[in-house]
Image (cartoon, rainbow, N blue to C red; front, side, top):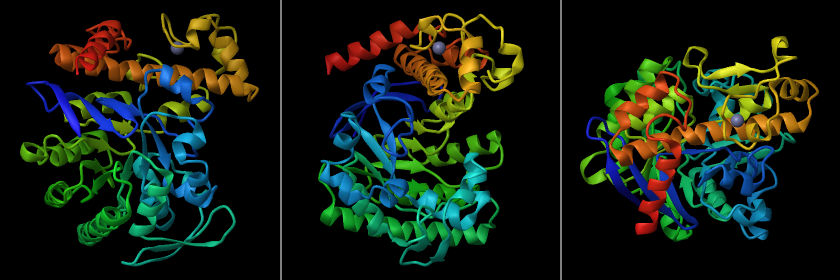
Length: 416
Ligand SMILES: [Zn+2]
């Protein structure tokens, strides 16, 4: 599945090519969210032109509306949304359990308001989860088999198994029982997919186990040994970054040896420093709402680690700012020479163009970070590049230059 082209000798980082039915993903990669069959505000070709190989669709939302049958009628999710490249779909487990576990589950991934808008879980059992649609209150049921069937109809290149997303606040005993349920559901997902799934669709298992070292390692081992072609790391990753890195470290520590070629996806994580650390820990792909969501709220990514790589352009001090969103940024928004003052005005006026400009800028920023990291692994200079990015070097200028990184990545691709 994953051709590993280069490894960083000092960390678990690797650069590779992930082969799917709709083409190849250059890894490590960030995967923008296309929750409701669109990267909000952008067209497929725009996302591809930014350098992205894959997007992530959301099984839960597409299940409720417009429904997998309708999307299948349009030839599947790729044709429906006009995206010819790879698509990964999440299983719906996170959204379903966010309803049941409430705001605490949301807390894991930083979207506190989300759960209030969703429907309600009626019952959670070993057979599956019964819930009310947040759209119309109708009764819905999702089981491991349902999730796999939906993802098969959507025709995604990578499907994720249906898991119980264990929340942060629960104790070890609950985490253990929940993780065991996830493992039982994994077997059911794989059994259904083995019989009915599309042959070219890859299924990733999801490691749970919360923040307990033995449970997390054990879960990751169970997933890896199950025969799934890839491993996603999900559930509670801890209350703070140090703990999250530790949990990811436990997970990837048991994915060497015979499991080395299984691609590893880290669910819902995408802050700039987390991407750098995640790559060092051996993660191959990430998805996160951060760059697109921030863009829609007037926040631009900039190379300022002390400010979490953010500048809030809605602040009044930018009213007369004639400077660009970011100095010497090659993104499509900054290339137009538009000022922070203009972008601030658009965002304040709730003009779609403002959200689009910042979404383009933010996704381009994250893509340059990933291209830098990938290029550095291929060039054998990851330590320097990681240090430069952490110190606030603008992505694309952190050694090696993004142009060289992209070129070297392309050369490798062309050679295969
Ligand atoms: Zn820009």
